[in-house]
Image (cartoon, rainbow, N blue to C red; front, side, top):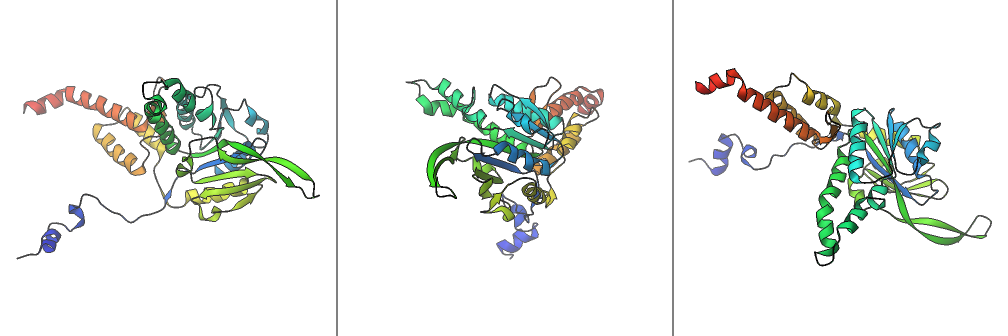
Length: 322
């Protein structure tokens, strides 16, 4: 009589009969997510642009600081859109537009505005806070899905993403090189949700003497480093790391295939498998009306439309009668 192990093996092995499958892990080539925080005057914008210039050739800036980044346009060429209302829906639309236009690097300067700025997350929570109806906890419960959508949109963008963050600061006194007592502002923490670093590949705080103290890095060459005058060379290190490994998918190719008028239901099912494998279902796209969609939405809508068309076709009706 066969043992349980032998019987299972004869049916195709142990692994095919378990609820979860495991595969050999490989590093994936994918765009990087980077953030720089620091006090006013620490060089956040210029650092972000210099790093971005090494990551790609087609840079877009989502500008929330009254056009401040434009002062550096002669050093780092880029295109920008200036926002004055920081509803996260505007961030989704801006990312979708940048993706459709093929920008391989996006700089958000500064991302903090979508948290603390006009109509940002904090504004929304305060607006929805009503005494006697659960208060602030209930307001956060209502707005948490939008907060998660922001994270998904940032992770799904099909290019490198560099963000600047404003910082809470405190004033310290210390001696300078001549022994005189001076005061300066130092960053305490970024003005953003407390766990934002979990979603980033590199996060650093800009300090005095054009220095960047890297607090979090998935890139071995940058772990616990202090970079002086960070810029193009640091960007090259990040780009080399990002391009190592197997590709995770051709995003623009996915969009073209999803919108192909000759697409079939079978082809879309195959596309869905590829998109899922590439983990880019949430990548932003725009429909023909300029409305924000995810790649998963687009494939789903096309699939439902084609299924209805096929069900209404004469060939389908004859097959049903048979």
